[in-house]
Amino acid sequence: MSTSQVLLLAFAGIGALAIISIISIAWRRGQDDETTEGRPDREASLRDRDIAADPDIGGEVETKDEEELVPADPVPIDPLKLRSEVDEETMGVTRRQFFNRGILGIFGLFLAQFGIASLAFMWPRLKSGGFGSKVSVGKIEDLRIAALTADGRAQPVFVSAAQAYVVPVQGSLAGSSFEGLPVVAGGMMALWQRCVHLGCRVPECESSQGFECPCHGSKYNFHGEYEDGPAPRNLDRFVVSLSDANELIIDTGAVIETSRSSVKTIEYPQGPSCI
Ligand code: FES
Image 1: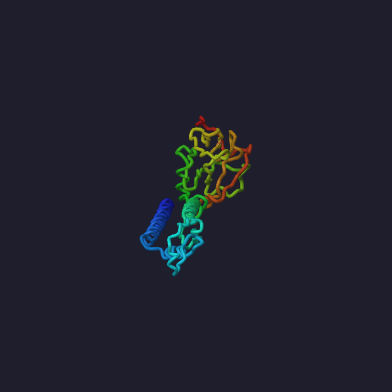
Image 2: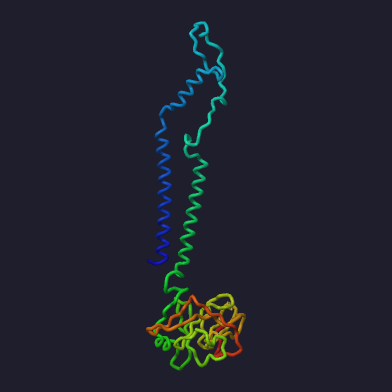
């Protein structure tokens, strides 16, 4: 199952849960309203009876003396004395609690979605074979054929899974800033496509036999050595090795930076520039 499918399923699950919760809350509130509607409130009846018997709040005292049964002037009832505290349990969910819980629910939903999105973002780094891990590129013989034209000029092979150009090593690397580093296997190197200036993708230029960045004009030869522009160093490259089956393995989790060098291992430019 792809990352986007997992993400889609997760969002659908969260959405379904949210809808079920809302329907459940609404249904329960409806039930509460139904059960209380139309029924006499026993506490209210008792309170009315107490009021009727309490002379302090306007009630009447029962008496057996018939003379005192003469109607007296009505005494106004103090509404403040009728007030009584209602505890939260009796009251149920107040409007404020309802809104607070709603806000908390929305915030929780947002956090869950953020967490899932973060996991999805990291997913390619966790699984094997993607960028950030070792990528098998294919048989070294096939790569050598693909990376050289019939007249012997270099022709970088772009490997999207590794975000890298596989280039043939032409001549000696002696004196270069990457001499002796584990960046050559089977006569091939893997250069990261990312410009070391500000990160633009650097396209190849067949005519000049180099990589030329369209963003600010940095130029590198086909060994990724700095030639021109604001780039501070050579193109970064990955550690490479050969498998038992003679396949080129690019370790995209192992990036090697090398400094500019006055010693160039390959001629550049070999023709007109592309930018
Ligand atoms: S990003 Fe390539 S030269 Fe600036």
